[in-house]
Length: 183
Picture 1 (tube, rainbow, N blue to C red):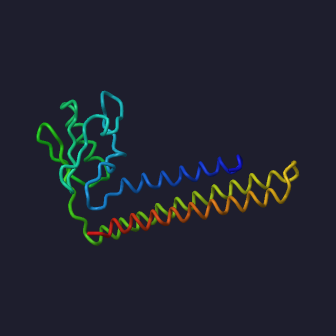
Picture 2 (cartoon, rainbow, N blue to C red):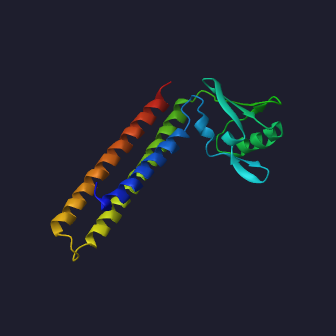
Picture 3 (cartoon, rainbow, N blue to C red):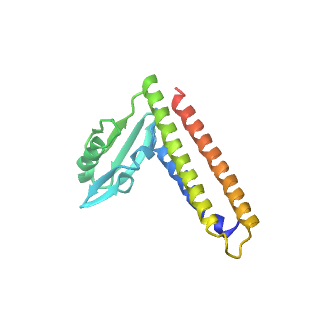
């Protein structure tokens, strides 16, 4: 791959991977430890991801269990979950915190699919912006020792790369939407 294209390919890959991690945080009726990825807890004055202060496991399909290594962290973890946008009330038995995920209603599933499509559209816009930046940088090469044909070839390669990532994003949207709508 041309060195000039590599930079833009890396940016598009990051955009795609970021979208996939955002999709991982959207719950689809089943308990998924990734819904906790964005939640941090105050651990001795430092905001720390929940996964770094205890074990997170899935004992049942619709339940997450958090067992902190330091039981004095129970209240802080519970508070962090309540303050988050998860919308789930944690239960605490003195040793572990349990999160029971309610069955999603049809309406909530449709809202989640809309959210998935919106995030997907944002990712596609980001990919197109990267293509635009790439094409702008290729246009600046005019008048240098690179031929117009070579610049055209770079632009065509950039378009093919853009099409590939857009297709991948569409596939990810489709897959996540299907997962959400499956009861």
